[in-house]
Length: 147
Image 1 (spheres, one colour):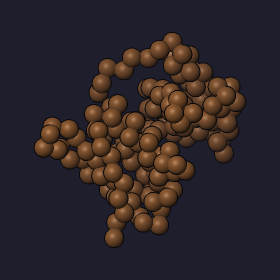
Image 2 (cartoon, one colour):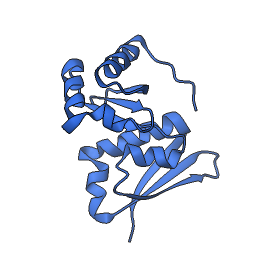
Image 3 (cartoon, one colour):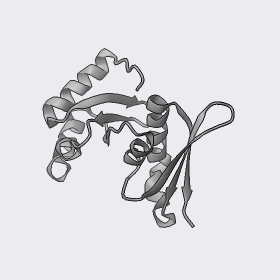
């Protein structure tokens, strides 16, 4: 796992999230391009973080005045990428070592769910790319459909 350095702003956001949800936050990614905050939470705490009918997330969004997304942590890069997208629609994640020394990932999804996986304007795919690059040094992430 990389050495994560957090700014004082990120530490403040993590504190707000943990106090409001009770979930343990491992990292906070401020996605300025996407205009959102992505919180990486400890495994098994997704229900705690989201709250009943999404109430906790809504309250946090009101306080931080930005959309909030939550991803469950995993030490396994394939599982982490799947969590960042939507594990229900991901059939398989293949991690490959390229000839130039970089790593790549191919995510196989149901063709009928590709739009949901990508998200509006590719937001979900971009979130998965950010996470894959930051934690596992995976530079290239492709989303492909199963035939």
